[in-house]
Image (tube, rainbow, N blue to C red; front, top):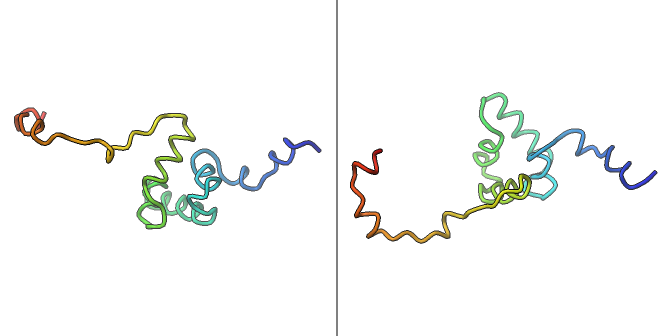
Length: 98
């Protein structure tokens, strides 16, 4: 049996996939917590991400970091952005509403 054979029969691989699997693998949430969030999301017709965050055990930032890695997209932290409030005040209310 080679190394690839052991990966093919991993219980984690068979029960979860995609982002839920990656969140468990990266230790953001445990497998039972993920299954509970998936079930609650199906019952409430919301996303499992919403359920994880609402439960309070997972931070949105941790999910965002893991999702960026899983999907190969860059993550831009809006909290790191410094906004010049004087520049914002020069924009009229009408433009903001549009």
